[in-house]
Length: 246
Image (cartoon, rainbow, N blue to C red; front, side, top):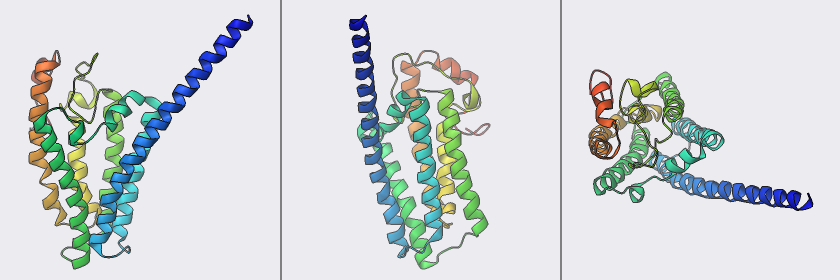
């Protein structure tokens, strides 16, 4: 009996240590990605030429707070999916075309953080406060929508890859469009400049449209070739991004 108890304690101790190492790894990777995000935050206020830019503070608090809340949710409910979501950036992509597309999307995101700041500094345009608040609410809502999508599809990685056991998901948002995560991201991208108080920033946001189209078309080629049943799903759900449009 003593041997069994000791063995059990050793097993539990090993499990606790493994859990601690996993949490430490997640924390370090999350800290690194948060550090990267602080660059566009700083660039927003540098471009604005002042820290007295309330639209910038509200937007980044809404964006980073919602992003952190999403991470906490995934830690509690689906750490495997969190690990997939944290593999992000051009270096994480295996397809050369996707490396270029993702790099351009990152450049667009940083530019989207800078242009509204310049707009604020030089007074190029003015977005009413009510629209600024509404746009921030849309951004928070989109993070909630992302959680809904990920609950439906726990293979919704940040990179284009087909994993063992992956299957076609056709329920929830996937019953209406084939890429609901991108649909939510596109709406968020267009809400960002408004949340930052800039009409001119919408021109930068528009650059996301051809980039997302190129990413989706290339992704679908991979899914069609490697994911069983995807072609049948495409025939059932004809719209990629926006119902009755495309």
